[in-house]
Image 1 (tube, rainbow, N blue to C red):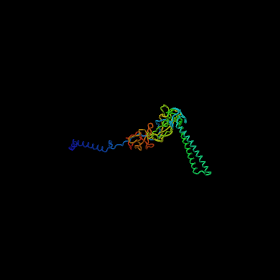
Image 2: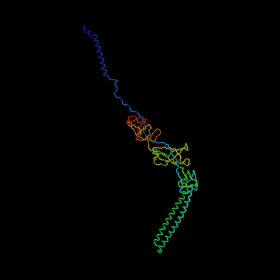
Image 3: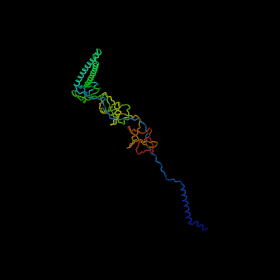
Image 4: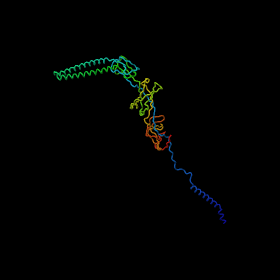
Amino acid sequence: MIQRFRLSNSPAMFVFRSITFFCSLYLTGWLLGCNAPSTNTPTTSASPSRPDSVPVLVLKSESVQKEVTLPAELLPLERVQLFAKVPGYLRRISVDIGSRVRQGQVLAVVDAPELVARVAETEANVQTALVRYQNSQDLYRRLSAARQGAGAVSVREVEAARNQMRADSAGWTAAQQILRAQRDQQAYLTITAPFSGIVTRRTVDPGALVGTTQSILEIENNAILRLRVSIPEALTGSRLPSQQLAFQVKAFPGRTFSGTLFRKAETIDPQTRTELWEFRVNNPSGELKAGMFADAKLGLNRAGSSFLVPPSAVVTSQERKFVIRVKNGKTEWVDVSTGFGVGDKQEVFGALAEQDTVLKSANEERKPDQTVIAVVR
């Protein structure tokens, strides 16, 4: 019994028990650690990225009006150069530049002695032809009466007399026509005003030889003026609501004049790509002069409604011009063409509709079919 007690309290037994105790503690801690949930387990899958938020605008059709300033020119309502229709010498001229004339007023007289002589000769020929016709007519009547009586005149003689009478009648009529034409030509020696206006040019003096190649006078009717404006092709589809325009000229700084649309050329000039619009301008006082240049202001309206977007919404590349529309959360490129620039907005045309949402600031880096969040601002 004494020997067994000593063995249990020996140093070797103490060491053995200590090792066994610590091994038990370690094993218990390890088992508990395996069963406990881990709070530091790393995430193996990344969370999805959030789509970009982009500012957009909602399209609304609007009536577009734009005021444009274009160069214009004032022209007279009527302008004519007067020539001598027959050669001759200028006997008299009664007007000069600046003279106001009335329609039908005699302005100049030309002398043409050869024409006067021809008229006198033709008058004599008319009288000769008349006498010849009267003689042949009398002969035909006598032969016809004789044929009805004793029958001494043959039928052939009567027919010959009748044919001669007809020929002489035609000769007399032709002579009258020639005389009428020469008298009309003689009337050309007196030059009259074809309309009321003002003389703007005089090129000859009395005694000068005049003909059909050099004008004697030039007359303009400037009581009403034509204002002609060349409208660019892109604007010809627009309209003037009141058919009026305002214009200014350098001769009267600060003053504004008006004109009324009168006619359009209805064709595009292939050289300038413009259409000519003509306006009528009343000028009773004559203060506006034909030939003046003017700055015409036109308030043009589109015939239909349009969409207006900021210029930053339109992307222009070498291949195309487009805006970026957001539909069902996806981007898409829509080809457009541009029209008026109205203030800080740009008119666009394309496959767009009311309530479409379009990016306010677009660029080529924003590709089609990207997922975005549209924010209306």
